[in-house]
Image (cartoon, one colour):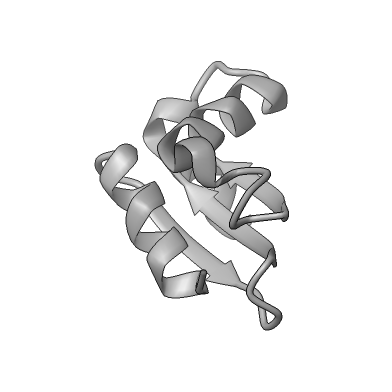
Length: 78
């Protein structure tokens, strides 16, 4: 598994989202996901939305995924 594949899956599963994914060992990754659909949702719900885009890869090919999930407004510098 590689970061670019994960990025594409997240962006396909959450239309309009922008994702930046990093991970050098092929099983542990971290991602920043910016998506308008996160508005009004708690962090756990946001994370579940991202995990849903990855399906069975989570816990298998992807051992760990550290997430930072923001709306576009939250992502803008203050």
